[in-house]
Structures are given as C-alpha cells and as structure tokens.
Length: 337
Image 1: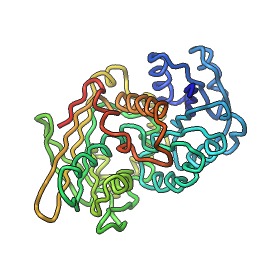
Image 2: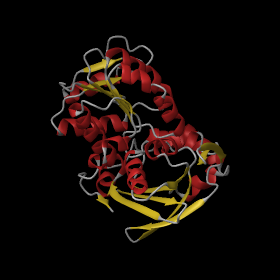
Image 3: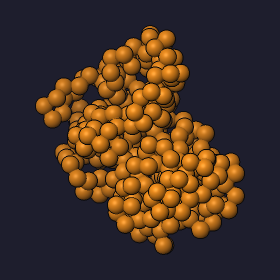
Image 4: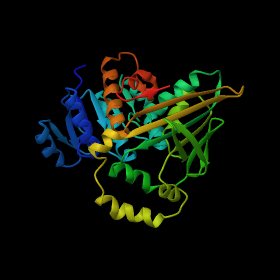
C-alpha cells in the first residue's frame, strides 16, 4: 500500500490540526472539503485539494488508500463517505463519538469484509483510550458483568464539538443493562473518582459511543459512561438554562476561538478511569493519564493509519481495542496503570 491519505473536512479546526500533524510526520495528505475554502489551504500547505459533497463523491476516492473523515456532524457525513469507500475499496476512519453513529457505522461490517477494507469509526480521543482501557480492565477478571467508564479533560473545545454537545444537550440516551439498551436521562447519576491526586465529579453521559463499542469489545452486559462537564453544562443536561444553550448556539459560539490555543494543546491533560466487576466481587481498574484531547486524537489517528498500512488480516468495522494497547502506549505524555 502506498498509503495515499485523504482528509475530508480539512478546513475545520481538527482537519487543519491533523493536516499539520501529518506533514510534520512526513506524510503529504490530499485535502478535501465541501467548499472551495480548501483550495487556499492547499496552496498554503502545498497539498493537493479536492472539492465534493459526501453524497456526490463520484471518482474522488479511486486513487485513495485511506480516508480520514473529520467533517462533523458525523451522522450526516458517515453514510455517503463509507459507501464511497466501499466502492473504491478505500479504508475509512472518523472520530465520531456518539452511540447512534456507532450503530450506523457497524451496519457496514459485512460489506467492508466483502470489499476487504477496514472501517474504524471513533478513531480519536473520544473512544480510543476508553475502549482500550475497558478491554484491559475486563481481561483482568473472570466473567466481568459490569463496566464503568469515566473521563475528564483539561483544555479547550472546538466550535464543532461545542455545537455537537449543546444541540441535544437535554435529550435522552441509553444505559446498557443486562445486554439491553434502556432509556437513560442525561445527568441522572454522578460518579466521583480521583486520578493524579485530583478529584473529579462526573455526570452520566447517555450518548457515549462507548456504550456500543465497549459492549462489542468486551461482551460486558452492564455498562455506564460518565463525563466531567462544567456545572452549567450539567444544568443544561437536566433541562435548565436552555435559553443560554440557545444563545450559545445562535451567537456566542461564532465569536469563540475556532478551537484550543497552542498553549492549551501543550498544557492540557486527559484522565480516564474504567472499572470492571464480576458477580464474585472481583474488581479491576485501569487508569490512563494522557495529553490534551486533540493532541491525543492526532496521535490515535496516525497510529491507526500505521496499523492499517501494515495490517493484512483484520477487515470489517472494528473497535479501537482490536488493534491493542500499542496504539496509545507510546504516545508522549501517557501513563497507563
């Protein structure tokens, strides 16, 4: 494989960040987007550019080995790009992080196997380390039955991430009980934990992709997912301050920085805890402390690309833990125990 990489959504914050990261690691990606803004970016970085919509990909992927979809919202871009990748036999990655997006991506498993390609949704910080930690924790005890996943971040967020979080902030999601999806309200429970001598109070997050990927990866039948959010976000999850949510979506976000600053990228941190339990009372914990979330994502994507280039066996739609802990354990600044 020559490894021709196309970044779709190259003009967004994460797209530009990953482009710079690939260039710094001696890759020359092809930059693509819906609008002609990508042309000026390509000229600036001396990269080839392409303009197309996700539902009109046509022949734009015929010479591409790996497509990295960084154009959210992913429930709008996944189908068109995955189906185009199936036609061109192009490997596909994205950084989707919500439950419905995982259900959607995994419906293409048989097609991907038949076309001899890999489809890896949730290939960024949002799921890669939590999925790996979940697999590590459940592998350490016999017959795990319950899994708790929690994480916290220090740093900023892109406008796109904020929009995704805020738009359905008080909408119900799921909790996995006895292998079944049950109705769950946002912020219906809290979970307190401590990592790196810091105390965190996380709230139940019913939209997490881990609710799907962790069950796929581990087979555990009871799964809960928690995220540390600012207090005003927790109130919005409970249906309060929605006037502020609406104001942020309509006006405030547009005046905010496009994403985290260079200082935030350098100094930010991420904290992950997974706890697996069984009916015999055994408990296993995996703790991960890593770099800022966007920096984490850049590393995950590049390491998965390297895995795709050398892999000759795995095919289909896969969870991140299918590739083992090595896709994160060499990331600078990471601690796993």
